Image 1 (spheres, rainbow, N blue to C red):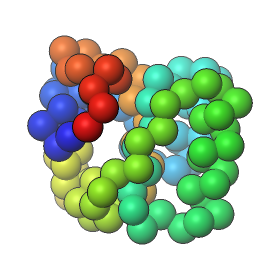
Image 2 (tube, rainbow, N blue to C red; image 1 turned 120 degrees about the vertical axis):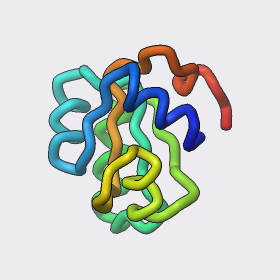
Image 3 (cartoon, rainbow, N blue to C red; image 1 turned 135 degrees about the vertical axis):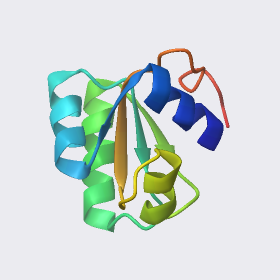
Image 4 (cartoon, helix red, strand yellow; image 1 turned 120 degrees about the horizontal axis):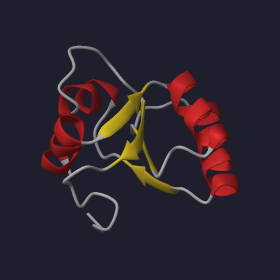
Amino acid sequence: MNSRLKLVMKSGKAILGYKSGLKALRTGKSKMVLIASNCPPLRKSEVEYLAMLAKTQVHHYSGDNTELGTACGKLFNCSVVSIVDAGDSDILTSKD
C-alpha cells in the first residue's frame, strides 16, 4: 500500500487532511479515502458515512496518522487522505 500511495502522490492527485477530505467527498471529487488506524471514532464514522453517500471506496490504513503522513512523503501527521486522481498507480483496483 505504501508504494502505491507514493506513486499516487508523485503522478496523481491526493488531498491530505480531514476537512479537505470531507469537502472532496461532498463535492464528489474523491475516488478513494484512506483513514489512519488511530483516527478518532467520530471522525472515522463521519468520513465513512459521507463515503457511503458518495459511493466512494474506504480503506482503513494499518498504520497510525504519523505513518500515513510519512507514506505520503510529508513530515506531518495525516489521519485522512482522499485520492482524487490515482495517476499511474493501481491503488483504486488493488485489494491490498
